[in-house]
Length: 192
Length: 192
DNA sequence: GGTATTAACAAACATTTGTTAGTTTAAAGG
DNA sequence: CCTTTAAACTAACAAATGTTTGTTAATACC
Image (cartoon, rainbow over all chains, first blue to last red; front, side):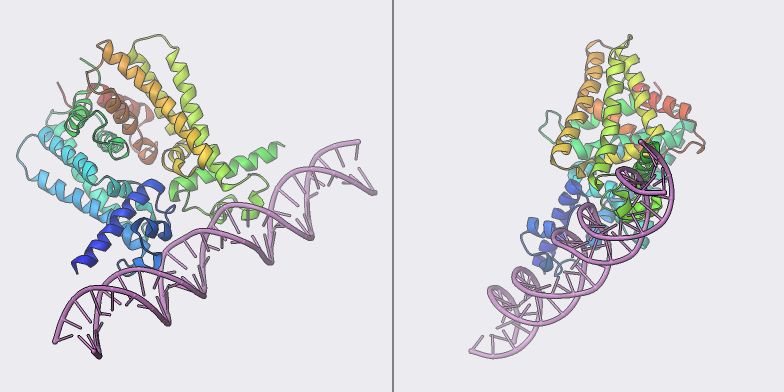
């Protein structure tokens, strides 16, 4: 039983890496099987279909994001504090599960009908909560009076490069990474 | 002659839209032909292969970015001014040619061997020039003393959402869009 | 008006795709 | 030791893929 979950997890992890590298459409079940170390047909003892793999990866990420949002919403502190904390957790998921995040970012469009709608709804829910923090901050005079949607997408998009680029040991620690990103997004690159 | 270029252009334009919507791997030549209004085989009178379409779209974008960089590098002004101008042109290409930019952002990985290397080199060249502006600005005391690579990718990534999200007539004009993005990236979301 | 060229088509190509069926191997349980 | 079961394999499937072929209709050129 634990062995079955193990092999399944290996397949899912390896799929995330391959999907990130070559895309969902660019990765065949035979490619994946080669990476896992078995024949393509054998994987069907552990997974239901290629689509199921994609679904698992996408919803693992969206569920985590939504859970983090709920946690931060119940924290005390200013809108700036909450935004900072949510952003910190958002970045952390990328650092810890970069491949899955990449799939959820880039390959979600290959989800089928029902699951596609579900995923888009989950993403919208996350964005709505994120936007509310920004809007409240603007209303409270904490933030600059920019368009909240523009701010939302600029911030969410700004951190997306992390899973593409960041490798620990590239001269930048995770801590410094977070700090510099926060500095730029909250205080700006220019000196006052 | 002009008609031939025309049909080819239609195919390329329609391909950009479809690749953006469904990805390179998710778009079949028959899909594309359906959109263009002819049979798949007929398109081969105008294009060499599916790969050639991808190459054209990707290099059209990378060439434009590099040309814009060269122009801005020769301008007079502070590093802040140059960075602002380069960013403005960067955003503008997205607004004017969003589908092609999307392909160059997301489907470049499907380029084959030689072309893949070329494209990665072009992208690196653009990033290097962009980074130099930031480094010079930091050295000159114009910018905050953040890690230049982090700043580079945060900024480049921050504007990537534009081609995914922005539609004129969504309550935000292109002008206001540019202004708000610049404000956030250069001055920060938080009030001082 | 005859001839070459362009651009469309239908049909077929070989390959690759995700997946299923049937079989074999090996470990686990009594 | 026998039976059961999980998990691997080989072989094959139908469908979809990018592309080539041969052919036909229309357009341009001398």
